[in-house]
View 1 (cartoon, rainbow, N blue to C red):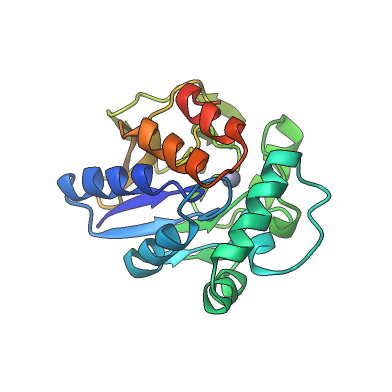
View 2: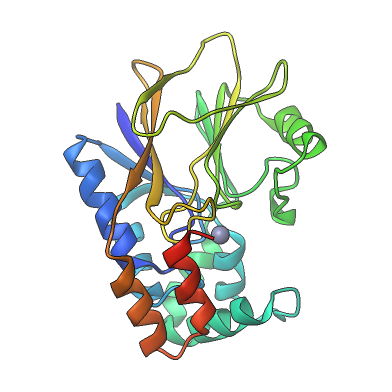
Length: 242
Ligand code: ZN
């Protein structure tokens, strides 16, 4: 089965629609989502609705979590806090309950899905350093795990611990001998200096993944953020992919 793995959509409807279209052209049969459907972007409700309709599995991200409850937002920097307060107001009670009901982890026979790390998923660890990656792999029970959270796509192998270069838009074969952590990057707010939306297609039969980059109308996403009087930085960063 061919499946598309989407992460960190962050209320960016223009990016999400472009990714869905791209995946349909690639004859994807199923969509999976790694969380952070909302927060930052101008279309939280619309993105939530689409993800809810289209995705077989959705795991909970940190932005989904805080958009669903009324917990204090002191840990977030100013722009994120303003967008989260606005997002809470835009969502219905039912939308917020749905976000709060999402599982932290989904595990199938051959793959796991988590927003940040399988090591204490509720702590939302960033897998930037060797120690964080090792702790994650110790908790990974499946050959493949998909995660997001950093907004930077990546391929990590366990033994020996290694990070591999991504061949964008080209097939990447997964060895049956190895275990992998695959970061899908971000649909709605990439942070690797490339503003194009990022997602992954998994061909489970051939054991191949393809990291995709998709152009979308960044200008329209930026205009919508500004029109809603959200912090201008949230619009600017989309143009630079930071
Ligand atoms: Zn995120």
